[in-house]
Length: 80
Ligand SMILES: [Zn+2]
Image (cartoon, rainbow, N blue to C red):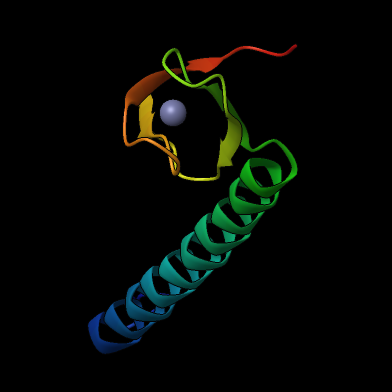
């Protein structure tokens, strides 16, 4: 009896399946990263300086940012 697929055909099929999985995953992760960047852009982090009272924004995902006026490190404010 002859097998339905020969060994080289099975290997080739597995190779293409692997490439397809990697391609789908890379597209999925690039789309997800783009969505996350857009959300971060829409909500910048708000800081208020404890020394001079200056309110400023920082789009970087950091818990503290330096005041552009006096250089004091301030924590982010969660909304006004
Ligand atoms: Zn300041």
